[in-house]
Picture 1 (cartoon, rainbow over the protein chains, first blue to last red):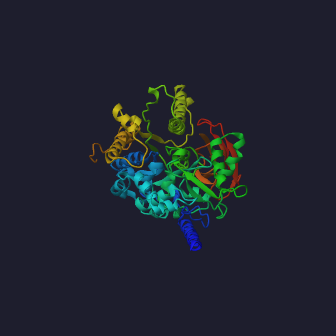
Picture 2 (spheres, rainbow over the protein chains, first blue to last red; picture 1 turned 90 degrees about the vertical axis):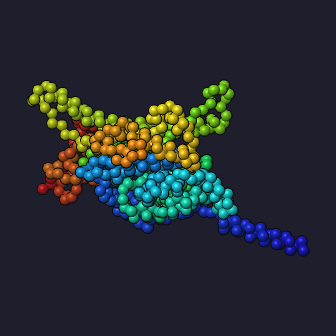
Picture 3 (cartoon, each protein chain N blue to C red; picture 1 turned 90 degrees about the horizontal axis):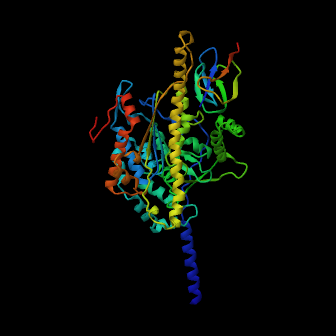
Length: 486
Length: 71
């Protein structure tokens, strides 16, 4: 009898173990790319501009910051929809002229929704995402028996569960194949961070070519989950690399840039080239899996990729190439920055700050400083474009002042008008209101009233931005104020 | 930012590092570093391509890269 009980117990244990193993989750594997084809997949040049003119080139940048960032970005999308401009003899919405959206973490949710569903975002997104207690729902789905079983797998983490949740509850399981099928601008770039290289990992086919993987088979929920895999709370997401199996060829500039490394002529370009090569190296310690964490780790604004596109010819959607071809006359970059600066009581007491406080500061302060520098880079870029023009006109004026014989005939590059616009809490005039917004937490659930305030303040800061006002003057624009449409 | 003029007797599309990046006889802007310049077909120009390090230019003194017609 005892022997039988032992055998029964052993059988039960084996059965339970087998059940547990079979139930353990494994990450949703990204599909391989059969053959590298630069003429297909999710690429800027494959999207029909339609009536969207390159002459007015508009880039939106949505920062990280959980639901706070999602609501602020959504408010700016609403403001752009309600802004009418006069452009190429047509009265159109400024939103129709948006060419590219680059997003991070919380900002990736409205960006992905807009990529997938276009204008439906304005009917559906608040109830599907903004007003929901996503964070609590995520925790609830983790604490179910199915969730716990899945989390027993070594290659399945909390972000994999979150990706399934976003697919099911937010994005309706939409994949990049559907975004490609829409074939319309804007080109939406969700950004994550490659944990190993610490560099930005954009969800574009140009990036997935490096892994010989087909982006069209990846869901927007998984991309948003990677972009918002907040370290600590959420786990990194795993992507399989099939590098070397699709006949991929690096662009010509990569080899040239690597050769430049020693000369230190353009270290940034060389680093970008070497980063690309890290994915395709197949001889020494090839990277079989890529682990992606929150996009904010590499750049919490989401502006670095657009800055490369503006400053370099060597980018898959280089704006500089378009400028050289005289296709762009006005370049608008709208940065929606939901960064905060919470009040602390640390300096009210002589006590030594605790470990959690110290570690939090160590993690958050460099991010803030880097974001500050990123925004400075944008201003520098604008200055550089304007400086060359000032130099030419200054020389011409000086020559003319010496007499008509001294007139200079200087060839100049195609000149553009640059409009750098920033929507950030620091530009709220009233101190109490500014402090209230700057103390909002980073979470995936906020009270409905807070979401509504964020939407409203996003529109308000945009409309008050001096560069946005200049743009409105240039485009004979009409902004919707106080909820009234143009 | 660097400034380059690729000269050729006629107007021709200019490819920089394999991508269409502007036209001949106009000032092109680009990032510093070694770049490969080619003209759009027909291949009646000399050289066929030019690999050159672009650095230290200004808008007033762009680098000049000359292609000539072969026949």
